[in-house]
Image 1 (cartoon, rainbow, N blue to C red):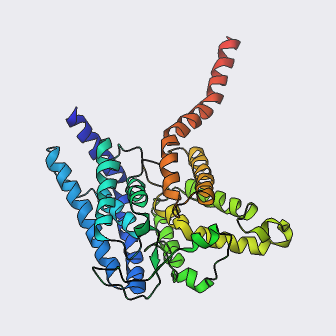
Image 2 (image 1 turned 30 degrees about the vertical axis):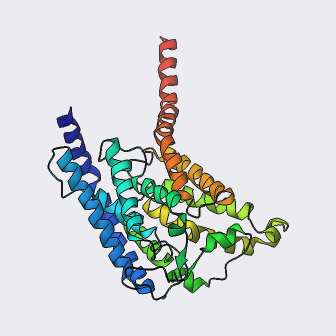
Length: 339
């Protein structure tokens, strides 16, 4: 049984292993930009996350008495995705716990490579977000002087999602949005770099565009037609179209929405296989994410929504398979009736 599982995982690694390598490489420009904004600490955080993910992989290999697979970059990719969702001032132990929870609980507890039903990075993030919200949802301002070890003296503020939740409108300029010059998690703010990463991943066919685009469109439509700002709610669509579009811009950049569309939504084993299933998955994920952001208390609600939608991913594929099989069933039934 274990030998069969091992061979299946090696087959899956040969098929999808390049995805995780590309995610790791695309994390590098985000790490460099965060180092420019916050100093050397983000680099050390990402290195600690990488080391933790790798050690977890080696530990599991020893416990399961299998050979460590150096070609498997999935743990490292999950670790980097988690690290880039954290603020630059997060404590070291919180990051280590997040990576361990993602790798050991989210991935290995379900059988390892390709067997997990929930996105491991989302699992790790949710664990620490619920356990240490004061560590995860408060951010330093860009260009702040952040010590490498003790960050207790650094001034922290809430992100743009807090302003939007209270019915306000952020005053961040377009150029600051593009460069990520606002209080946010390490890798979620620089729109220009995120779009460049998305372009590369698209050329490598690592992003499931039906899922990612339907996710962003669903989020944007909900924000446009159901804004949280009272003055826009009381104004007709045609009179406040520009203000609503401006609001969509802030909502998609905040709360790790754009980042999640690029680095989380298209995970090979938690996203549906069929294109129609991916469209439905992305649209439902976008709606659920915005519901959580509107009525919830957590800023990066998309990770909670991803875990819920992961449970429906297989069901969506089965529903779409049945829809595709209906014409064939009808044709077969018509031939039998004719005979």
